[in-house]
Image (cartoon, rainbow, N blue to C red; front, top):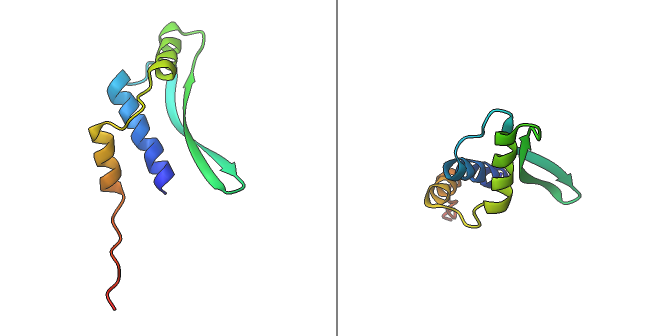
Length: 88
């Protein structure tokens, strides 16, 4: 599923930009059912009482990339095969 692959690529990009999650913090792909199908969002679960975990989550929220980096774009191209038309 393309949306799921995009969410995972975004998690990988966030880890490249901000580093791995500190203890008490975890990035997850969250599936949300909808009348028109399931959509996905990246969620950051963190311990609000842990300063490092909280700061990491706030940095993600405030400074998340708005464009795919080269590695994410390559990951998405690699994961999505191009279908060719069948010859008659």
